[in-house]
Image 1 (tube, rainbow, N blue to C red):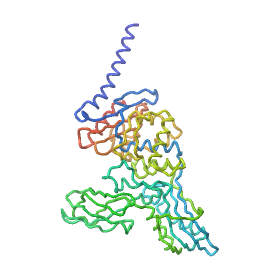
Image 2: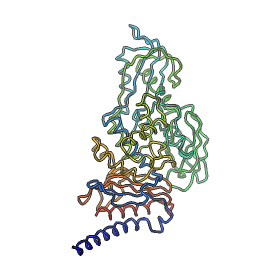
Image 3: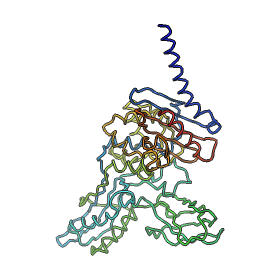
Image 4: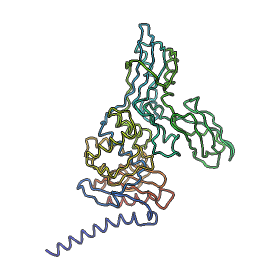
Length: 469
């Protein structure tokens, strides 16, 4: 009997030692010697934690923060939830089709209006039909974009200056249009010269630029816009390739509601509906409003898939702030954060290990533990929204931000996860289905001893392959 007990203890010790070897190999090397690492792997069948290292330590997650935003939205709003944008009038439409008043666009933060990612990019045709169906032939007033459902902050205060003004950190407003992104076409000359601005699309005539760009020998876009929300001045720094006749870069639209109002006014006028006033985002005083049309976004299930597969910051931030709007308040960052934390606390998750600043993970002040991520993944594994949530995640070696991760390995096609990457940060969190195992994992590495995250990514791949056997 004693012999059997000793053998069992020896087996347990060997298994534990093997597990620790996997973790030690990942942690104890020159690359990760000085890194801040939070790591955890959990067996979803047994509920046991298989591997961990400082799993409760809050660490900068980058875009894996989108898991928190999308999971919360699914649980609070449901997979079939739709953003609404309404067309409203604040006057009477006469029997001969004259609206003595304004046509108002009231937004609730739908990120898909005119988006190149989802939805009907030609939606203004539907809005034109809606105005006609309301019997309106002439508007004696303005076309007003009302974005007041969201506050006027625009940019998250915890983002860094280097990001503000760029397309990947575009502003967040009650009305989003064309991904809140403009495209600038440039003509570059010899090395050392300043590229010439040819045009921007869409046309924003009041937008001005201080151009500090340089033409260099690089072969990629290294240009950055700098500018604040609602401001019509932008500075451009960095470099683009020399001797290019039509090189394109992208920045954020500072007042997307204004651009939409102008485009709708042009659409109406060019199709025979006269508008005496202008397209504007200045609301002023309006009378009693009547809704004449409601525009719906694609389903939330499609929106969160775009967020997680493509790591879409713009969609994530609009969805994040929209969570505050559901409380009957004007959407704001602080109220969104409060609602998210309150929800997960009610579900028993370790919210004291969640320090969230935004919805996309763009802020370097975000911090989350591997334990919190794995707890969230465990919860979503049995949620009624489990299938939708998992289907929103990219698949290793196949698509999205994971198309090259674990490609050509035994785990290709067997991992669904969200990645996170920016300077000196690499993270992955998600699910592994391999060899009959169902695992939830999170690995967050900050400040490895390398200026590139590719070496850390390789170490992560090796670790996940080992623990999945």
